[in-house]
Length: 354
Image (cartoon, rainbow, N blue to C red; front, side, top):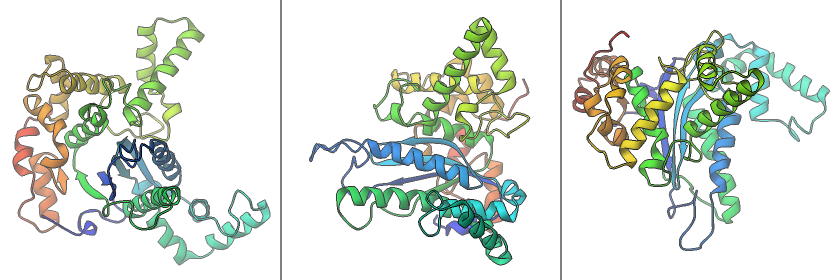
């Protein structure tokens, strides 16, 4: 069921969305081209760098990402409360960082930059418009895809489309859908046979999170002389994710709101075990150790493997518990959406307290 994106991605409202887009030309434009034998893998780093830049400007958090050979997946959370708290001057500063005037903020003297910011901040109507744009999913994705397309076309010395169409978008309506979709995104390289482990999955959020966690753990262990087990417990309690602070944290802390109701180490374990099932030929078997986490999230353990293997194809505009999908349909004046039947299978169990 096709709907205009503005019907279900509401301006100024918080939401979590799974976005993905593919190249329009011959495959592997972000990897190794088998025909020309040119390697375009550096474009993956270009996408990640641009994601990091935009996350620092927009009131939109990156929860997960996976950059593949000819497409990419990202999960984004719109933070309407954050953009509302910004002063007019901060909105102006962020916008001029995204669209510097003249020779650019980096090459412009401090006095000129200050005048530009002050002048823009005084335009009340313009600031109100820019405030909406800085929390807009479409503006975020547009600035990401446009940047990559221009760089790729310049490198290839061609004109025209780089992406096959506007980005696809799925609304993730509850914790069960967010958990399943994040695992689906983080395991993309393993499903494609490009990696054997989550930590070996290049250009993914799971690899970045694991490396940062390991680095911090080693540093604390070296400084304090504590055992690894003790350090891991201490880190979970403090939820330190400083080296990946451009990513939305897994678990909430006193400083930042997380995306999942679980510790980072629990999420790592969930991804690792799920990846072993996908990579190790254990399709259809569910490790009993997974059940406490999945039940707590409201996910059916018996359907977990199918859910994380085919998330994109099983759900269309939105994913979540059946009750969440029904509320979503009612809000849009619809009787049903594609995905109700898969939701009954994947997300029928109620979360249990632990």
